[in-house]
Amino acid sequence: ASGGGAACAKCGIRSAELKSCARCLQEAYCSKECQVAAWKEHKISCRGQEGQGQLLSLDAIRRRVVDAAASGDWGEVLRWEGRLEELAAVGQDPETVVLVLQAFARAYIGTAKWDKAGLLWVRCAEVCGASKFFRTQVEALTDAGRCFMSGKDWKNAAL
Image 1 (tube, rainbow, N blue to C red):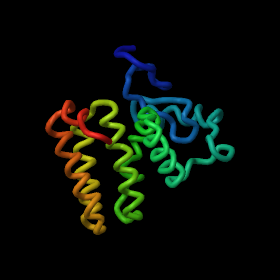
Image 2 (image 1 turned 45 degrees about the horizontal axis):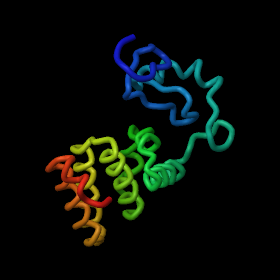
Image 3 (image 1 turned 120 degrees about the vertical axis):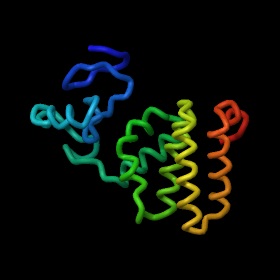
Image 4 (image 1 turned 90 degrees about the horizontal axis):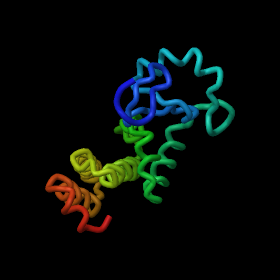
């Protein structure tokens, strides 16, 4: 195995970028291919965290992400990074989408991933503009600019 961090439950490759099983959050994999290959064995012991083996609903995950961001638990927010597109899909309630995008943007800021944070703030501004949340749109664009300028500038601004 190579690299640092935890090891993939299927192939053993060590990485800091593993994604957890969305159902039980106990096993982590380096790729979708490893997760699919491991499922036959893993499903025997996999137990969902809410309701005996049931997958978490997108609404439950959204609540977890927003709550984790509010408490500054960036690891919990980023645990769901692989599901960001589902969680903030077009057609959802715009306020919910904005909350999810803000949660991920703050997690990226908290982990010094400035470009990713900036892109999410721009996306947040687009959702706000289409939904007539103009005050939030201006705030999001301002935050995006801070992220793109540099991390040092963000540290001088209040979240």
